[in-house]
Image 1: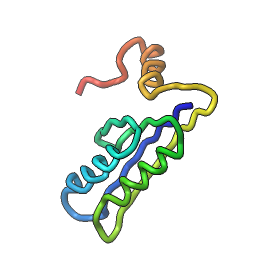
Image 2: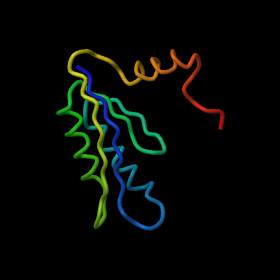
Image 3: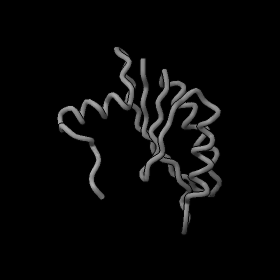
Length: 103
């Protein structure tokens, strides 16, 4: 089984959130997950959804602030092991090129 999630955790504050977002990302290190941070969130990959939920909770709790906004989207593929990179490769196969722009 493979579970993949898109996680976005941020304090609701004025100014830069990067320091608090870094705390959320750092909290993922305590879990058996792989992750990749991008400008819109962090993609997390684990063997099961329970691990993703635990990691997301830790990331949420790591952020300081009076108000914290967290978005979690999970793809829990229960019938096969398909990694996040394999999902991207499948799209790239259809495109015939890498799935990234030239900016």
